[in-house]
Length: 296
Ligand SMILES: [Zn+2]
Image (tube, rainbow, N blue to C red):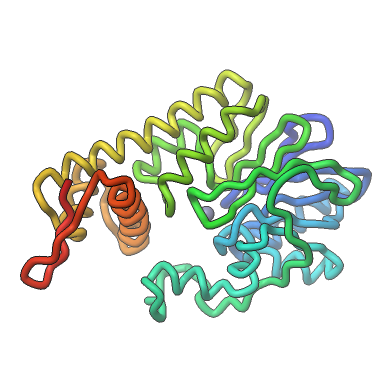
């Protein structure tokens, strides 16, 4: 857990996730705020060491591991302003919606380390797209909808804080099957990013991507990952399969050893691919003897 410089007045804090820091004098804007009370306390401690107090926090998207830490930061800095996109605001103010959606709109199963009782954080302002000014700093907001309904990337002085929309090549290899909820939009997110000159990108998880060449390469590798997962699923449903059978075979092919959390993540991403393939006319399903089978 350390404070690292990126360039000029930009740095980041590496806790379980990466927290962006844009400094202006003794104030700063945070990008995300960690996924635990401990993360929040560490952020406060590290900012104090740097002689900084946070005036605002921009939340990239409404997954609890990006904003749960705010509870602790607000105890010390109650004036902290919270920003997010208009759609993700609903999830940030009602984290139950995220857990509820993981379980097909039913009361969620208890998962280890997931704060199901978390009551949420009030969002003070919404920012969906375009160039905005926060605390005197001009920041570009880039909307993303492949990982969550309306996540945002934050672009400032050539540095992109990409949330969970884009991963380093190292992280892609580690995750094997990243968390996507909308494949068509994930392709569009990567297309949109290819129009930007980015010289440093900090994803919320894993290592930073340094330099325009590595950034362009990361875009290519993120796209390759989508294409290879699409091909794998199309190949596996050449013979009709139930979703459970399909997930079992995906895990075998990608050497994913299921625990409950990984099972839930693979379930969501697999559904996202199947729905995308069906909507694109590349896959179909049928119900036979009470079981829904996918096929192409
Ligand atoms: Zn996320």
